[in-house]
Image 1 (cartoon, rainbow, N blue to C red):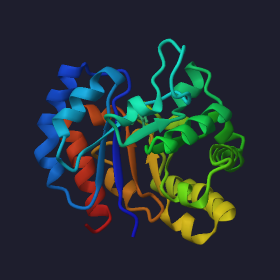
Image 2: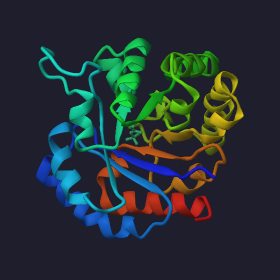
Image 3: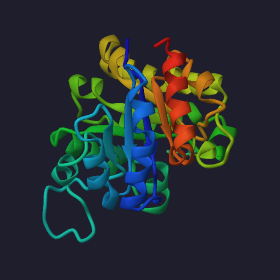
Image 4: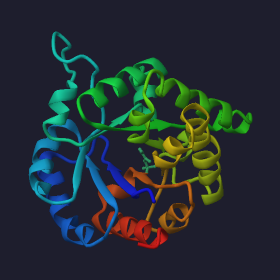
Length: 256
Ligand code: PEP
């Protein structure tokens, strides 16, 4: 069975002090939830303090981005080894980075390759716009993003990845995908594409999250879907009680 993975994407919220306080507030309850990976993804400047706050526990830290070069004259960027010093995970290709910061399928692939080389677990985001969904293009679009993201990777590397299916129309809107729609894309598109490219063993190993307006009220049903192995949670991960309930519900949904 795949180990569920619940990650909080804090986006550009929480200072280092606020982030540390939030983690301290949630720590005990989250650690009581068995057999689920729990990951906090703070802003870069909060990462070291949050990492120190969870050191020695099962709670993990992820960055929200990285750059693919190892070092050099890239003002403002953060290298994979710098991320790895504090983090086990890194979000790559979030739709906000694709939309506002010019990320493409090609840059996403370069970042995945660099992250893997540094020993990080990439959480790779894919998902369609509302216009694409309404045009019936969801399947082709998401499949194309997955194929491009995985370019050049070995089966072993792909088996260790996390892919987050995040329909853009559901992010931050309060309009989550229905559990059936989440399952259809996570299983019928993302996992199916991995199966087509890498075979059954890799497809069964890779973990696929759903993200987009996951909250304390809908997490159980979404996480109950067999091809949804966890969630990437934005807004609700900033509220201690909500994120704790979401993680507890994910464990319950998986019978843990
Ligand atoms: C996200 O940004 O990854 C996300 C899913 O946000 P929200 O949960 O706020 O929709």
